[in-house]
Length: 91
Image (cartoon, rainbow, N blue to C red; front, side):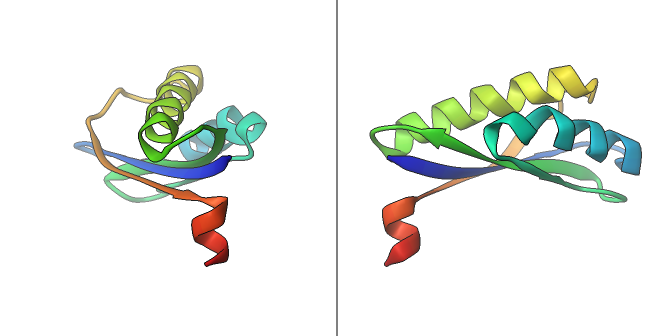
């Protein structure tokens, strides 16, 4: 089943336009989008294939952490993680 996983990491400075664009490029292969321009956080929403919510969150988090590294962003603490399945979305 497909899951949309949203993750936010908060830090100690504003995130630039260029940084969010780099994160968007890094999550694009996972059907992802990025956010956080001018905020004290950055985030992304990615699509993963998983059997259940906990697996989706784990896979989404792994994807997010890899994308953050690829984008060259600081490894800030993850403060929010949410997952919704395609079945939940249709309900």
